Image 1: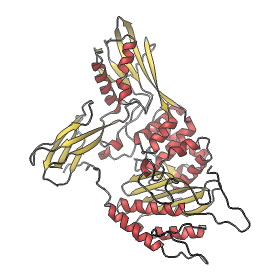
Image 2 (image 1 turned 90 degrees about the horizontal axis):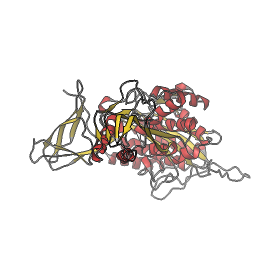
Image 3 (image 1 turned 180 degrees about the horizontal axis):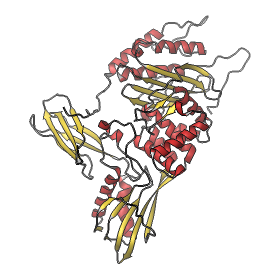
Image 4 (image 1 turned 90 degrees about the vertical axis):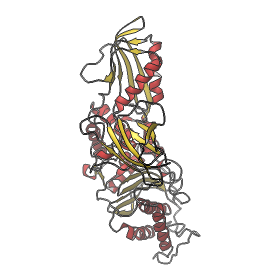
Length: 523
């Protein structure tokens, strides 16, 4: 039996059906409508919602959260939750705050915070084009080098414009090679602990110091006319061919989509096998074979279209040779790291996160590896009072199942950033509930809408949500919610997650008699 990966398609819920989550949420809201045991006080209910307009004490908040967290849907789950006042560190609620959890994409909060602290939001990446040889009568007698610096912003359009730079420099022919130098980063293109069978999917696309954004390919499978006919693989936009051997057949109308990716046993092409239903075109979003090779393939096509002849190969750098004194060079500068933080956090971009981690390592220690970046992370966290055991990381994106974070350590990081000079850049990069990013379709019509700014996280049986909100008293609260090892559908886990955060958004600090009501400044 061959091993592979069944593809996740739009509209297909790999952890279960959405209605199940809605039913659980409805049941919880019904149970929460019962008065909480707060002496002398019965909560006013929002008509039709099932939850009170405000929770006026930590005791009431804790009672509400305890009731949600005791739901049978979480019987087998491990749950960690910490809620603190940002300014004072006062703990309003804590459940297993010191335990370690798989954080999924909450890891990106650590990557963003450390990158802003170590490099600052104005940091930019540089990519150099350099002619190594004499230039005579339009002919470069030598090699053309493209030296990458880890720029996460190089688009296909940017690469397609490079031949025009060569023409302006008077280069119409290159006798040697076109060499892509991605040696600014070392190590494998994937993170430690990534699942091998996900390496052909867009979210697990590898990284290098020289790559296009996005380093992914959109394609589709078109069924044949009859059952058993081969399906046709088509790219949705022109570009280099993928090293992919497609052996997918047409199934019966209405049958399930079943696709698997099989790694080549000894090099060669990745093999895609399976079935798709008749009359249904199936969209695909795939990783490229290697980021540098894919960029060079794009550049090779652009050179050919511009009429610039290359006498040698178009290849990666593979030895210690570098152009000593280029006869011509041009530096391409990127957008800022501050912009990259937002581009990473809001859509939860794994490749951007891994590029940031390696950039931190290279800039701070001279070694562009994940290990060097993680060493910098450990040092910065220690300065914020977070011990290594509370955040044990293996990558910068959260794809690794080896990552472990304690909720109270995440809360400490969020509080450290709340006091940080670059807090506004960090905060503005976070998804906003019911507005944008990975929270754009969540918490709509609740007290959290437009208020909660938080990073989501999701792997199989792991859901996390950590960030900030402003409570009813105007205070900023930090929270970290981590749910691991649940055996219900993912939609149920998300419903519970959202309900918990809704209750936190309802909290309002009690006002002592004779004292003015507190109004924080959100900072």
